[in-house]
Length: 248
Image (cartoon, rainbow, N blue to C red; front, side, top):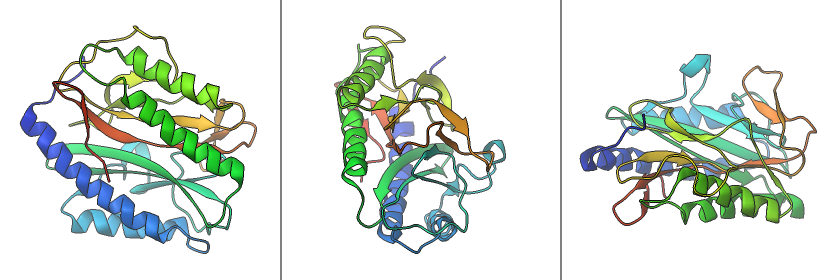
């Protein structure tokens, strides 16, 4: 069953979403050659705790950190390490905050210094895929409409969408119903109704969409070593459309 949030609950989630967005903005400013992902982790945890929230990810299914810091071919769930960022890398930062009884979740992919034209296009296409999906979010639409919009746009640009991972409902639990794929057919799946809150997260690859578990046991990376990109925001369905709860 897909949980429906009350207006007061959505207001709390929006407050948590703004905390999360501010944390992400501060992390973005630190993404540069020479910094380690462990340093980004330390900053993220400090900022979350100072805001009055808690880390949603730390301890979830054994994950050891607040921040997922996934570089280049790794698309999600990489734990921080002593690996220093290098000029030309792209890095996906995925983070969640637990605030007043509710989880929030978002992700962005950032460039590290100057990056290749291909990497620039990948980031642009992934962000635009989210925008295309967002147009489908309003009462009466179906989750298949969101999924189709994501897949259709990404594939029209020559890239592929990940099939092994997906977006999800969010609220009192970090992962709630429904699962929201990055591929699908129009008119399929449950109907969107006011009060639903979920994370839309296009995950895009330059090469093959198939993934494998990284050597660290947590991350997911492309089987062919191709570049990946991830963009995620938390969205509420409103009476006449939608509201992004993690908007910068």
